[in-house]
Image 1 (cartoon, each protein chain N blue to C red):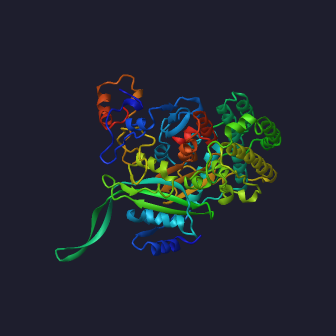
Image 2: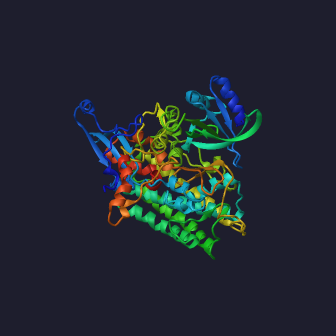
Image 3: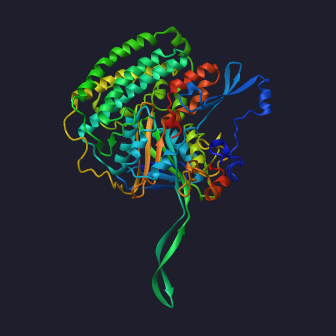
Length: 207
Length: 399
């Protein structure tokens, strides 16, 4: 198989508007990946599937990753009272949800090519295009990501929760998810316990 | 305190994430069906669903016109639990995924971590991994054949024959690892302990006796007219659909696709073993049954060779650091050919003691993608057989 950089160049040649970044993986596994922008994900996926020398016809694994908002300390040069100084500033980095696709080729027996796509943020703009029309194997896995991470897949034929129940409100795999206390083991649910349980009941979780 | 799943009376989810149960039949659809459609719920306590699995089936007479699998009755969020604990502590918990095949689960997880940090495995440990994995495949396929017959109405006998043989293999696991099913045997960079005295000879006895059992089993079943008429042409899976829907393992190969990770990836020391990859012709339920029988015979060949060649030596580097294990930042996806299909683990490390992201690629769940396609147009009794031939374990489907 070609190197990922060559694949990236050919993807860009076939779909010049797409934004495709090479994401390097520093671990010894050296499984590098391609980050594709949301608008061209389906086009890139189709190209990878149909290209005669790649033929990525098997979408093995689809998974979500949650990257919460974080802060970073950066040193910025600033002019204070006419003197240039290095000042440490805290900068907020907005989080996002990421979806990772592991593609293999059954026809040519090679792989993987790893695709990643990110949502704009974690609250409102959580949509990415669904790849279920390209690989049906994504169907249940994308439903699972919708359920556990809260990524909305546009164009998915049957986007419902998979493992949690209808009406459950949160997304348990997110890093900021707080699991409810296990009230079932409270011998006698008293006022304090009931008080603690209240927010979860309002959220629709078990309590 | 209204515990349990039914407790919530809150409406659908947050705006934009509306979750409507689209399965419930609408009045219009009932009209379209001429008013003769019947919606039934099979499971989650139905014995044929192999655990707590539910299928919402719409029937017209006896014929399936619609089928939706419903998951989540055994969901305990394995991935979240694993992200909250150290790398090593997840190893015993992988046993509980597919509780029939704990040793292959161990191997898949160990392989993913070894890919992540670039660990080498000693020779003897590689052989022990192959031996235990192939024994696992034998007992899984034997039981599957038994369960399939049970689903077909051959009550008891084939299943008990299968369980009798499985018990011999579980005895071997018990003397090697201390547990029949929850083995917790592999470690990153090797195996937990060496074999007890005489263990390899016991394995040799089981491996030598197994073909006789298989012949006997096949004599009873393979040419059986009832089995053939119930399974041939039932639940046909085409090549194209199988690949597109990410079907893996015996179901994929029964559809005629030559894709066995032991050959394709050649992980561990599998390239050293010459074995055939059986393929199906029709992709029906009979092929899925037959393929497993043939795979068992190939597994026996691998076992014979491995038992001949296994060298002496350590099973793990004695200096291997298992506690306080902190991989460098990065990610890895490791996959093996489990008895149910491609079992993969995807790990992201941020340099800490716990994995930042831990994902299991569950073959049982993904193989259920095509359940509706296989069942449409067949009798409701056939859905039971088709589900049985896909071979699911709910511990892995729901995780």
